[in-house]
Image 1 (cartoon, rainbow, N blue to C red):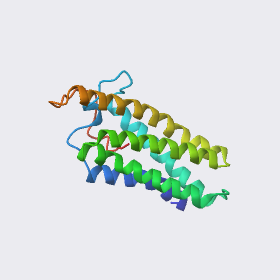
Image 2: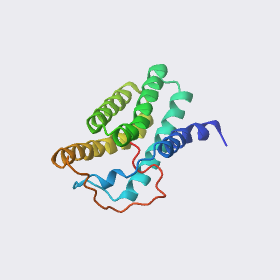
Image 3: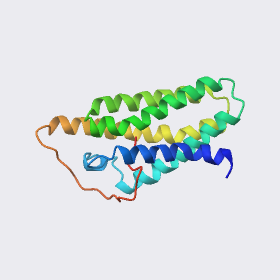
Length: 171
């Protein structure tokens, strides 16, 4: 197995471990009723693809000669730390608004990284992540609004999901 393969799988592995260690009692899809709400199984597929692409981006940052490699790697690490922090912030500590700010911060970091990167492939690797974060932002806003209107009781809804989707709701 090449070094780049190992590096590419690092974000997926760390996300799976974080998800396992901070396993919420419920899934994101149990909270939100939104026209943008995808079925639960979509989260696992999308996040797996995003983490693999994000891992490939890390490999390219490390092994390609980008003009601002240190800055890009620092932003990458900070963005990834925010990504790992989202699930415990939103579910364990019930900080939905902070979760929204985390999503906005991640979008800004990724856009800044896209602007700093001179490599077209690197920019393309970040595009699905940004697109999914825009969906996540809308879902998070719906979650906040729903929780404000129904603050007296937890109102769970059922959506399709699978316990096998280990990374399903790790934003």
